[in-house]
Image (cartoon, one colour):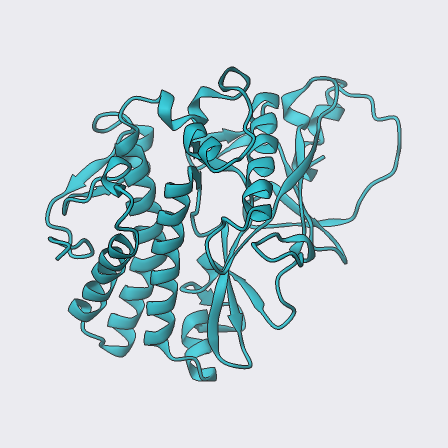
Length: 340
């Protein structure tokens, strides 16, 4: 159990039958534990509010996560995952006395990450760095971001920006096309770097949970999926009204705002790189993907106008705007105005 949830035992609602325990340390998310000397994760219910939600894992959600992991495993077996993407599966779940406050999931470790390769695990020469750590202050050098320290070490800052931006945009669009759309915020995504070559090497999706599933798309690719009535309707994008808005929101708010904008701001403010050049490159990433996938009508999934779908905590908690509660920004500099 999560260390902060022991009051459930103290209240007498659970009667532990063993004194065995596992020594772990807690990640910044507050509800993920990593056993000492291991790299797999235990994601626990945490009956407290973090940001806008109580972080309790109900049993239905846990079951859906298992369904999603199974789908990703099949995509990897058929070599359908995007290039240079690895995913950590969630294959175990449990709880005590039917109490959702005790639910926990076990995510695979780095050595078990799956990809299109038959070999499990991320390559040993790659160094994993959680995405949100890249543009935050480095604990070893408090006056610098980690990205700045890497540039001093020999990485090219502009190359990092280009490679990460392109990889995140293309990977998310590839997954939208497949029908498995993950929650790719910067705590869920780990960047992989080759420090010997001083290059960006790939993406590790830290969990196989998904925000949306498109069962029809997955079935067309030979993926065995659960029956629609056996899975949470919130996961089925074809059962949700206005899901095009929601899918666009995941792309704009999660990929652009969380991954790309912090890097662009850092390069502009620290190294005076022209913001226009940075924006034009990001625009070109979307244009390039659309041309490469000319056989697919991506506009059935996302809004390709220059309207940017933004969402902040106020939109979500105060229900600002229409569901799924977002605001539109016209003529956004990161979005192309045409695709010629």
